[in-house]
Length: 215
Ligand SMILES: C[S@@+](CC[C@H](N)C(=O)[O-])C[C@H]1O[C@@H](n2cnc3c(N)ncnc32)[C@H](O)[C@@H]1O
Image 1 (cartoon, rainbow, N blue to C red):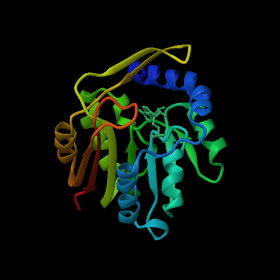
Image 2 (image 1 turned 90 degrees about the horizontal axis):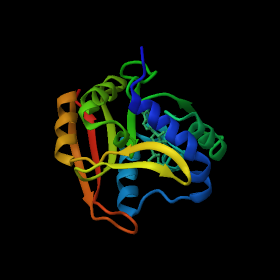
Image 3 (image 1 turned 30 degrees about the horizontal axis):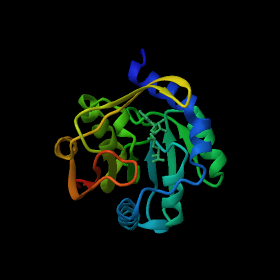
């Protein structure tokens, strides 16, 4: 089957920028206190070390995966970009990272206590989100948890150049209402929604949606 262009472009873009990304953000903090608060709540809900496995889809350099690990969560990462997977393995050799796409996860049905998508569904065109959320629903166990983070808005950011590389990278800003609707349709029940104001270089509000798979 031919791979959709958006997946090829996203992989190619992150492969090209991974070295600059690593250099620019060597010890990047995970979001601010509110983002970390949602991650901490998620870590508690999935049961920490005593809980089941958790996967971060779109784990990039592995900083958020490592943050969850520091909270005791049994977590690993999946990313589309081989260069990002290599970077994450270098940064966090104690954790597992594999190549893969959130659109077709190489995971058994109902196998996860939790799934985290931290600024990664932004690279999938919104009209394809229903299919992605069905895939999340397939791999999360009944009662298991989901946390999704994204920038809020209607107008996508499109880059054709990044750090001197020619890329074709789209960052889809999303509507919390529309994402909620699609998650509910896929079989998730919402637990919490946090939308915070932009801070630092951010131009738009940031959203964090916490849900669980309906039993
Ligand atoms: C903005 S970065 C966020 C990385 C990480 N979650 C963090 O916050 O540091 C987005 C990541 O999602 C990955 N990605 C994009 N589309 C993906 C897909 N379909 N499946 C898996 N990973 C994907 C990219 O390769 C990139 O590493």
